Length: 376
Ligand SMILES: *Cc1c(COP(=O)(O)O)cnc(C)c1O
Image (tube, protein in one colour):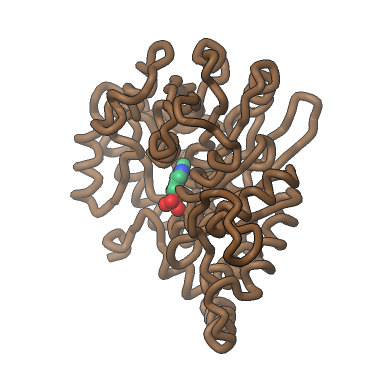
């Protein structure tokens, strides 16, 4: 039965659709044997820079490395504070802590799941040096007020764009920029389930600043200025040539992938908007949505029971994320909390992400929405 095959993400189905192109691209890498820093890496970085309309794209090993390299490139010092959302994936808090910086947690906007720009100013102290704006689930944070605050307090802004590559942010004067290219540095991940994904680990940084671009490139390559001459402490973080080849194929289809997920989201919106027990995700006025996740909020403490019932009907769902950063054992005592983080805590108890991907059939989706409306 088809419902037994419903998956959160159908990587194999998508591969089969582009098998010829992908196999050919991978075979070319194997034939060339330039597995590290092969020509495909540069080609892909150039294509991604063109797509994002940003001068510099520097590929690296994964999205977490990208965040770490970004903070290293900004030359933050131990004890400096970095503002982060309390409701997010752990990577940003993790690299902040690893570098001896202090995570300062700010609550999110329940409509967008992203950091609430109105709550950032109160979190700024004399030690604050940067804000990490995480673009969660497929929409950009509201970057205009964030950049204005950063300007006023001389802070850096890093955009963690692992989940929202391709989203367009519109400024109040009508200018449109791709998410991830507005702050000082943008980072992304090409983890297999992300909107732009490879067949293993991969990541990248983007910037419009030439000095930062040079520094980032150096840090990602052992801090080398030239071979065996190490100007700064760096790390080893590279995008494999095989992964770059896969990504270059997938980048060509990124807009089409996004469009398909938007259609799936629209069908969910239509079917679920009348469900009293669910809050469907809001589409921001200032950002397009690429629907990395379709995340509903389940009212009245019913989330875990609903997830269980869906599972019994063969429908997978995921809880992104079950704990806010300040409730994580490793981060509880090292974070500084700014204001009340109740919305983050509440979201962790009510969010549920439904299957959404490029291969979803309308029959599968009908089955999901029928089941959900019956269970509500
Ligand atoms: C996936 C993800 C990362 C980390 O990316 P990796 O490539 O797995 O290291 C960082 N931030 C966010 C928001 C993510 O979703």
